[in-house]
Image: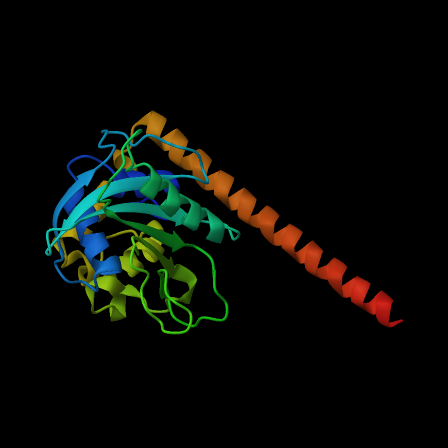
Length: 252
């Protein structure tokens, strides 16, 4: 059996953004945003089509409205980022989500909290050793939350996560293993499939269940990302070499 790589945007939307798979997305969000606690009581995809709409390779995302145990509604935008240089994009998306809650001509609103969850396939913060980082608005001196603090940016950097599925224990660890390893596994390992939602995610990731059209889309996107990662690495290497040469020239 062959599984799609969840880090490819089409596969991610197919697994987590398909109507009927809300329990899978709920488990993922509980793991990555709420430490594995069963915090989400209700969840609705903003665009629950059978075949997820593709919004472009860089801006591929899922918009979800969730209700927590405290009865508060939260707007969550989930996206997988494949190439560096996306830090500002996450902030832009959070601001855009907040602005979209204001109807034209409306004077007073009680907006829902906005969370952008970005899963990156590269190291975004090289000076931060942890896999996950979370950002909100705070006062610099007193470390107090902004009174209208309604935006949160959460980054999960997959390359920093070193465990394999054989050693995964928590729900958080098991979902990260699924995201990193599913594309190269031939069967769903018991260590992950003991979570019903992850077992279902493997079923949704079944490459052989795709239609001919879906297979073409997934394959083309996988090739596209592979080529662009190689191109980025090559250009980054050339830029580093150029800076080294300039430094030598200056010294000499």
